[in-house]
Image (cartoon, rainbow, N blue to C red):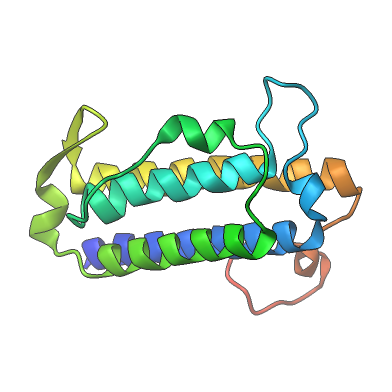
Length: 169
Protein backbone atom coordinates (compact mmCIF):
# COMPACT_ATOMS: atom_id res chain seq x y z
CA UNK A 1 0.00 0.00 0.00
CA UNK A 2 1.07 3.58 -0.61
CA UNK A 3 0.93 4.45 3.10
CA UNK A 4 3.46 1.73 3.96
CA UNK A 5 5.71 2.86 1.10
CA UNK A 6 5.62 6.43 2.43
CA UNK A 7 6.27 5.39 6.04
CA UNK A 8 9.06 2.93 5.24
CA UNK A 9 10.75 5.42 2.92
CA UNK A 10 10.49 8.15 5.60
CA UNK A 11 12.15 5.88 8.16
CA UNK A 12 14.88 4.91 5.69
CA UNK A 13 15.63 8.53 4.74
CA UNK A 14 15.82 9.71 8.36
CA UNK A 15 18.22 6.90 9.16
CA UNK A 16 20.29 7.58 6.03
CA UNK A 17 20.61 11.29 6.86
CA UNK A 18 21.41 10.48 10.50
CA UNK A 19 24.21 8.19 9.37
CA UNK A 20 25.73 10.84 7.09
CA UNK A 21 25.65 13.38 9.91
CA UNK A 22 27.33 10.92 12.28
CA UNK A 23 30.13 10.30 9.76
CA UNK A 24 30.70 14.06 9.44
CA UNK A 25 30.63 14.77 13.16
CA UNK A 26 33.02 11.93 13.98
CA UNK A 27 35.56 13.21 11.43
CA UNK A 28 35.88 16.59 13.15
CA UNK A 29 37.64 17.67 16.33
CA UNK A 30 35.14 18.95 18.91
CA UNK A 31 36.23 22.57 18.58
CA UNK A 32 35.42 22.41 14.84
CA UNK A 33 31.97 20.95 15.53
CA UNK A 34 31.13 24.13 17.45
CA UNK A 35 32.93 26.63 15.21
CA UNK A 36 31.05 29.37 13.39
CA UNK A 37 32.25 31.61 10.60
CA UNK A 38 30.09 34.43 11.93
CA UNK A 39 27.94 34.86 15.03
CA UNK A 40 24.82 34.69 12.83
CA UNK A 41 25.76 31.20 11.58
CA UNK A 42 24.94 27.91 13.25
CA UNK A 43 27.66 25.41 14.02
CA UNK A 44 27.36 21.74 13.12
CA UNK A 45 26.79 21.11 16.83
CA UNK A 46 23.90 23.59 16.89
CA UNK A 47 22.34 21.94 13.85
CA UNK A 48 22.61 18.50 15.49
CA UNK A 49 20.92 19.81 18.64
CA UNK A 50 18.27 21.51 16.52
CA UNK A 51 17.53 18.35 14.56
CA UNK A 52 17.24 16.35 17.78
CA UNK A 53 14.87 18.94 19.24
CA UNK A 54 12.77 19.25 16.10
CA UNK A 55 12.39 15.50 15.51
CA UNK A 56 11.57 14.89 19.18
CA UNK A 57 8.99 17.69 19.26
CA UNK A 58 7.31 16.86 15.97
CA UNK A 59 7.39 13.06 15.87
CA UNK A 60 8.21 11.61 19.30
CA UNK A 61 5.97 14.12 21.11
CA UNK A 62 3.60 15.60 18.52
CA UNK A 63 2.75 12.33 16.81
CA UNK A 64 3.89 9.75 19.39
CA UNK A 65 2.45 11.47 22.46
CA UNK A 66 5.61 11.72 24.60
CA UNK A 67 5.93 14.84 26.77
CA UNK A 68 7.40 17.85 24.97
CA UNK A 69 10.15 19.64 26.92
CA UNK A 70 11.87 21.36 24.02
CA UNK A 71 13.80 24.58 24.51
CA UNK A 72 14.42 25.61 20.90
CA UNK A 73 16.52 28.67 21.76
CA UNK A 74 19.03 26.56 23.70
CA UNK A 75 19.69 24.49 20.56
CA UNK A 76 21.04 27.60 18.80
CA UNK A 77 22.63 29.27 21.84
CA UNK A 78 24.91 26.33 22.70
CA UNK A 79 28.60 26.98 22.14
CA UNK A 80 29.96 23.57 23.16
CA UNK A 81 29.99 21.65 26.40
CA UNK A 82 28.56 18.57 24.70
CA UNK A 83 31.04 15.93 23.60
CA UNK A 84 31.00 14.37 20.17
CA UNK A 85 29.82 11.08 21.66
CA UNK A 86 26.98 12.81 23.54
CA UNK A 87 25.92 14.77 20.46
CA UNK A 88 25.88 11.66 18.27
CA UNK A 89 24.11 9.60 20.96
CA UNK A 90 21.39 12.24 21.36
CA UNK A 91 20.77 12.40 17.62
CA UNK A 92 20.85 8.60 17.22
CA UNK A 93 18.46 8.05 20.12
CA UNK A 94 16.01 10.68 18.90
CA UNK A 95 15.98 9.39 15.33
CA UNK A 96 15.55 5.80 16.56
CA UNK A 97 12.57 6.83 18.69
CA UNK A 98 11.05 8.80 15.81
CA UNK A 99 11.57 5.92 13.38
CA UNK A 100 9.81 3.62 15.82
CA UNK A 101 6.83 6.00 16.02
CA UNK A 102 6.69 6.40 12.24
CA UNK A 103 7.01 2.66 11.56
CA UNK A 104 3.98 1.96 13.79
CA UNK A 105 1.67 4.48 12.12
CA UNK A 106 -1.48 3.23 10.43
CA UNK A 107 -3.32 4.71 7.44
CA UNK A 108 -5.96 6.15 9.80
CA UNK A 109 -3.30 7.82 11.94
CA UNK A 110 -1.80 9.46 8.84
CA UNK A 111 -5.11 11.28 8.35
CA UNK A 112 -5.40 12.32 12.00
CA UNK A 113 -4.88 15.98 12.78
CA UNK A 114 -2.35 17.11 15.37
CA UNK A 115 -1.16 20.50 16.59
CA UNK A 116 2.61 21.00 16.74
CA UNK A 117 4.22 24.42 17.31
CA UNK A 118 0.75 25.95 16.89
CA UNK A 119 0.42 24.40 13.41
CA UNK A 120 -2.66 22.26 12.80
CA UNK A 121 -1.77 19.54 10.29
CA UNK A 122 -2.18 15.86 9.51
CA UNK A 123 0.21 13.25 10.87
CA UNK A 124 1.27 12.58 7.25
CA UNK A 125 2.19 16.26 6.88
CA UNK A 126 4.12 16.17 10.16
CA UNK A 127 6.18 13.18 8.98
CA UNK A 128 6.79 14.81 5.60
CA UNK A 129 7.84 18.06 7.28
CA UNK A 130 10.35 16.30 9.54
CA UNK A 131 11.98 14.31 6.72
CA UNK A 132 12.20 17.44 4.56
CA UNK A 133 13.55 19.54 7.44
CA UNK A 134 16.11 16.84 8.35
CA UNK A 135 17.26 16.70 4.71
CA UNK A 136 17.71 20.46 4.60
CA UNK A 137 19.95 20.56 7.67
CA UNK A 138 21.84 17.41 6.65
CA UNK A 139 22.86 19.27 3.50
CA UNK A 140 24.01 22.22 5.59
CA UNK A 141 26.07 19.93 7.83
CA UNK A 142 27.68 18.18 4.87
CA UNK A 143 28.48 21.53 3.26
CA UNK A 144 29.98 22.86 6.51
CA UNK A 145 32.02 19.69 7.01
CA UNK A 146 33.46 19.97 3.50
CA UNK A 147 34.21 23.68 4.01
CA UNK A 148 35.97 22.98 7.31
CA UNK A 149 37.92 19.91 6.23
CA UNK A 150 38.22 20.14 2.45
CA UNK A 151 37.45 16.42 2.44
CA UNK A 152 35.30 14.67 -0.17
CA UNK A 153 33.01 12.51 1.90
CA UNK A 154 32.53 10.04 -0.96
CA UNK A 155 28.86 9.35 -0.30
CA UNK A 156 28.09 9.09 -4.03
CA UNK A 157 31.43 7.80 -5.27
CA UNK A 158 29.69 4.63 -6.49
CA UNK A 159 27.75 6.64 -9.09
CA UNK A 160 30.95 7.00 -11.10
CA UNK A 161 31.17 3.23 -11.51
CA UNK A 162 29.66 1.37 -14.46
CA UNK A 163 27.41 -0.76 -12.21
CA UNK A 164 26.25 -0.50 -8.66
CA UNK A 165 23.71 -2.23 -6.41
CA UNK A 166 22.45 0.78 -4.47
CA UNK A 167 19.13 2.33 -5.42
CA UNK A 168 19.13 5.97 -6.38
CA UNK A 169 18.66 8.16 -3.29
